[in-house]
Length: 323
Ligand code: GZL
Image 1 (cartoon, protein in one colour):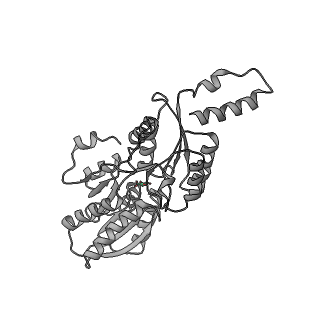
Image 2: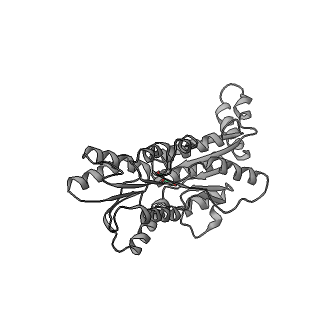
Image 3: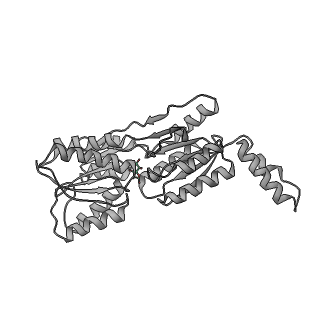
């Protein structure tokens, strides 16, 4: 707040030195607010939009925050630029939802040198120096993959499934953990066949495009293991357009458990959905309040998550969901 106010005053004095007398309201507005710069991956999925909404609701003006959000459009270089801008603007905190794992040390060293605490949310970064970030809040992606495989072991209609694997953005911890879970299942069950694996970048359009291409080539498969709901929506459209019934002709395992996807679990189009909880806003707010009061938050916090299948989901469960 102090840094942001100082920067604002300097900018205001430069601007106002040659025009009308200073407008005190221009700087008073942030007098007692905590200024947070949030570098968000993008708006590629329902999950991501729920994540952004959660941050906006928690870090609201009513709660005493000025939240500056930068949408990186899934490009790390835009995030690095945004972080540098936040430092320059003198924000009190930086929240980073990293597009990918590697390549953060330089810019986080700059944030550390400027004395701006960095809170990492969602995916994790790969850094040798954990002092470059204050703490991390996110999901156990490997556990999510293991849960999906455990369900497959008990519920698939064949012992030798032919599996199509739609991966998220390559090099993200979400993609790596969910892929590791499936790879462990493939190693444990030699009769499971991986017939296709490719990234669809967590997007619906790419998910549909890849499955359409498989169907056009006549590739046979029994299961689609899709690392997020938006790729799943695309895959389902491709199956339906080819006259196939998702959930019956092809078992679909998905991740995120967004509201729209849970409706599809209810109808049976999606057979199993592993939740990836995007509601990080309240947790980030709690971390900032801890830091403001001079105490230390835990270095790593895993959010609670569950999973849903067609056999057990209910309307009450869906209606009770926060996203
Ligand atoms: C997971 C998150 C992933 C979601 C996708 O925490 O990083 O990115 O699973 C989103 O929907 O695009």
